[in-house]
Amino acid sequence: MSVGTEISVEQLEADPYPIYKQLRAEEPVCFVDSVGLWLVTLWDDVQHVDKSPDVFTGETEPSTLRRTFGANLLASEGAYHSRIRNIIYPWFRVGAIGDYPDNVIAPIANELVDGFADHGGCDLVSEFAEPLSARVLKRALGLSFVEEGTLRRWFVELATGAANFEGDPEKQAIADAASAEVNETLAPVVERLEREPDDTLLSSMVHTEVDGERLTREEIQSNLKVMIVGGLQATTDLIALSMWAILSHPEQLEEVRADPKLVDPAIEEAARWHSPVGTSTRQTTRDVELGGVKLEQGALVAAVLASANHDERNWSEPERYDIHRREGSHLAFATGPHLCIGARLARYETRTAWRVLLDRLPRLRLDPERPIEISGWEFRSPHHLHVQWS
Image 1 (cartoon, rainbow, N blue to C red):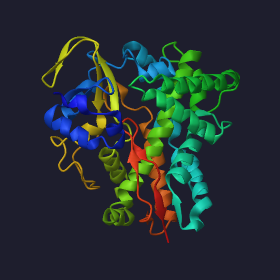
Image 2 (cartoon, rainbow, N blue to C red; image 1 turned 180 degrees about the horizontal axis):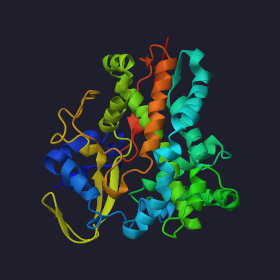
Image 3 (cartoon, rainbow, N blue to C red; image 1 turned 30 degrees about the horizontal axis):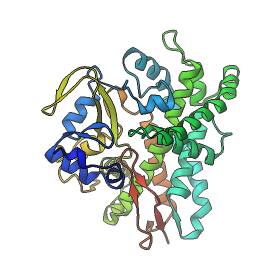
């Protein structure tokens, strides 16, 4: 009997890493009935899937992303994908957002710390990582008039649809309602930006033209939803996961305090150790063999980034967090044509968050009375991160 018949969504949500380890050892290309996907768990196979869009396409059918957002960057390939990416990408270059760490992110981070610095303790998820990501995202997108609570609700509801691999109609109804609300909210903003451009990503999406091509109104709406989910989820979770990683290894934290140049490798190792985004979902364009398994045309495949980042064939002691690891780059931001377009901004936010927190909160440490609970397999993060300082 296949291992995949025994795996439940609840098990994956609770902790997928033991399951991935078993799959890598016993059935590295495995159909998991509960999610309707072939899980691909080895480093080499995950790389192959992500880098072979002619065989493993992001234009899946059914598509949780297209079903929830509409036609978008993540759920497209070929000329259409290149056109969308080429129009959106210029805003993410260093020349466009190189001032963000000092001029946008740090002031927001310091303002948040001002609110709890005298308390001696806080929840770094709800009081810091989430509001930091939300406020930076509002500034970046040009949605400063949207309340943080509304933006977070949109994220939760849209992400519910994006991760709805089991096709639960109740989950999809929640996501569809949020999608319609975003469209309604954006309409007057886009009309204003057409007349009065500014330095935001939304304005750039309205006005950037490449080879005579611009984004349609529908493409602006669908890709902005992708940015909302990616910008809030991945960044919030990267900040929270990386802080949990370093705080749960106090001896390595002291090394980082003594040598700030270790901040970057410490964050990258955290992204490998517990990847915020679990999978890249693809569909086979023809019959193909992968890892000794024959996949028919149309098979839905999840290249499990989180598992590849723990593959014993590629990493020594992969379950160990080690800021001195020098074994190459991880796949937390995927690879190939769908390498995360917002990775630079996420890294800017996380590095700046670390700098502010470590500078301003002496002897920052985990609260021993408040255990950490982490869940999720597609989007994985701590529910809370209670910390103390002197």
